[in-house]
Image 1 (cartoon, helix red, strand yellow):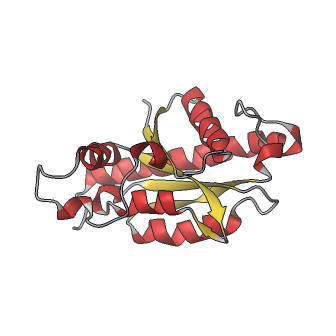
Image 2: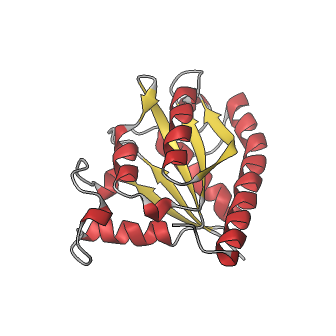
Length: 196
């Protein structure tokens, strides 16, 4: 039985390199039989956070928020594909994530980071770990870092060079860990109602 996984991506730049990595992750998860949905913060275009989804009276949230809330609640797990901006996390992805809270609870999250340089978005990945944990997700220990991204994935999201080979080798372990945590969280939610 396949799992429902949301792949969330947050770059608003006109020349988005990270989309290569998002597409790679989506393709590889689908090839393992997972049901994957792509959540593109730029395409959704939420305004800067003024009011969280839960702060709208029932039935009055903007359509984009209502739809996204349902997608998040219906997911078994999440993959956050994040670039690194000035040693920090992408504001577009953070803004999208912050519109929700309880909708994220009791499901695992995985982090895939990238950068134009050799550090592969490691600082953004580290920052996301604490943020996602605070928001009620279990962040899996396996991560993927890609950099320099232009030397790792082609414009068609295919692995190239030594970096691409390393990415191909690391992905199965990453996906296996995410699947393990998805199955564990599903079993726990089925066995016992969340404490709040």
